[in-house]
Figure 1 (cartoon, rainbow, N blue to C red):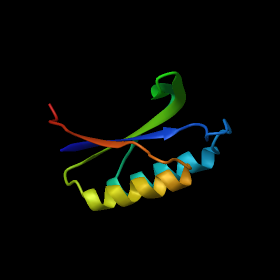
Figure 2: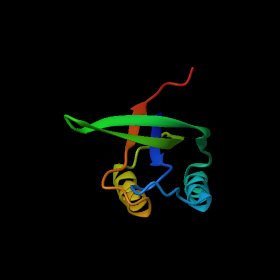
Figure 3: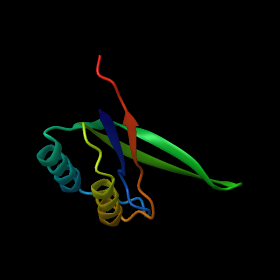
Figure 4: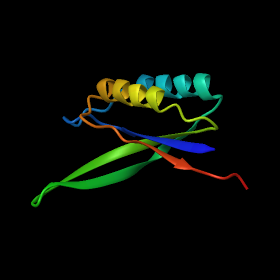
Length: 102
């Protein structure tokens, strides 16, 4: 079993929030394809990273998770690229972990 997590920004690079409709579309797309989704929307996570030795970038994100038995890397790569374009990101994080249900 695989757990796939998608980290989506709440704001574009100019600080303008993305419309709620975009997040609902992602929710619906994942639910349709995988039969369900978990969305962490109410308490955004905070991401920090260094762009340069003297510059730290801060981002607020929401996380979507799906579980699937089969990992279609090509589909996920294409979906990540599509989401990066929709959310105007150079790089968007989509990560996978192998999990075992207890």
